[in-house]
Structures are given as C-alpha cells and as structure tokens.
Length: 297
View 1: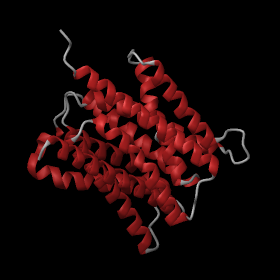
View 2: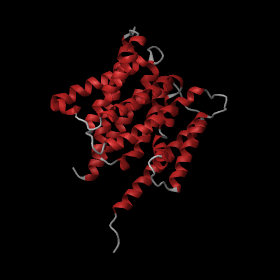
View 3: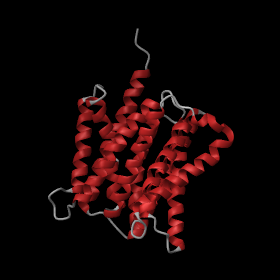
View 4: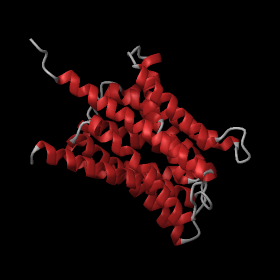
C-alpha cells in the first residue's frame, strides 16, 4: 500500500474513532438520567481495561507492564480519568453537540500551554486562532445570558485536564510503548473509579441500562483502538483537521436521541471553534512541510 493510500486509511480510522466517541458521549447523557455517574464511569474504564488486557496479554505477557516512568503513567491515567469525570458531569447538564464543540478547543489550549509553560515560539496567527477559538466558546456558553448556568463551565475543566494529558502523552510517547500507555490508562481509571463504587452502586433495573453501560465501554475501547490505528498510519498533522468531525457526529447523536437542535448562536460558536481549530491544524501542516524542504544552496 502506497503512502497516500495508507494516509487515507488513517483518516478513515480517525473518523470512525470520533464517531465512537460521539456515540459514547450521547450514550453517557442517556445513561446519566438513571444510573449514578461514577458507576457509569467505572463500567466505562473496567470494560476498556479488561478488553485491552484480553487482547494484549496473550502476546506480550508481563512485557506490557514495562515502563521507565511509572509515576507519569499513573499521572497520565489520572488526568484522563478527570477528563472523563468532567465529561460525564458536563453531559448530564448540557447538550452533546455544544459540549463537544467546547472540548474541541483543546488543541488551541495546548498552543497556549506550549507558549506559556514549555517556552515554545508561537506566531501571531496562532495567537489569533486561539483568541478565535475562545471567542467561539464564549458564544456557546454566553456568560451573563438568560440560559447561562455554572454547569456550562464544566467542559472547561475537561479542556484543562485534556490539554495537560496531551502534553504529557507527547512527552511519554518518545520513550514509552503506546500499547503500554493504553494499558495503564485503562487500569488506572478503573482503580480510581473503584474507590467510589461501593458508595454509588445501583443495580440497573432494566436490560436497556445494562446494554447502554456495555455500549459505553465498547465505544470507548473501540474508539481508542481506532485512534491508535489512525496515528500509526498517518501523522498528527494530517489527522488533526478531521478531529472536528466529532462535532457533526455529536450534533447528529443529540438530534436522534434527544431531538435537540442547537440554536443559531450555538451553531455560530461551534462553527467558529471548528474553523479556528482546523485552521490551526492547517498551519501546522504548512509549517511541517516548510521544515522538511531542503535548504537552497
């Protein structure tokens, strides 16, 4: 398979992955009406941990446990658990599409962290895109408006945790096996969720609740696996613009399950976030191409 075909396959895997994540978010909002959120969170991580172990352990055994940075593995797993916690509580109180659009400013926040924390040089255009992305988020949240509620700020906690999660992932990926990272992520999340499980356990009363919980675990597991396959076949600069397809899938899920259609201002804010994020990804692609061009003699 040539490079172009491999990259297209990577894009296909990524689009399928974000569709799984949108399905996970939609199901989470559905489940939150009848199942304690921390219990649902435990099912999500336990399913991923067990499924990953069942697939990986026969071929690798204890080698999958080898890591040079166990503390950072635990920190990474904790950050993703906090991301899920913020996501679950956010989805209980707000529509799926608007929630997803706010979360999609994460790449722009990473740019902000790169400049303020990592000391990286950020161009004026990138700062403009960061400002545009935050403006889109404010349009969706509309602080001070009639529909504003403090729960609309919950996704911003997710964005902050996710940005640090991505920064730490980029650091660990230089020396750590991605499969090992995925393995630890599942089990750290399961461990943390298990601490609260005895206090929140509620036996699902219907088969639909059991099915929804199992579907959440399956969607999360398959989505993360597809994400790994995508990044193994195409560079992040190629794939990043397609991450914003998740906004469309989330809006579709919200409409199909909850009959929710975003209002005009929310649609405008979502479009602004997607446009600034995609432009930032395009700028990254452009700069990476410049860097690999041979110097003129």
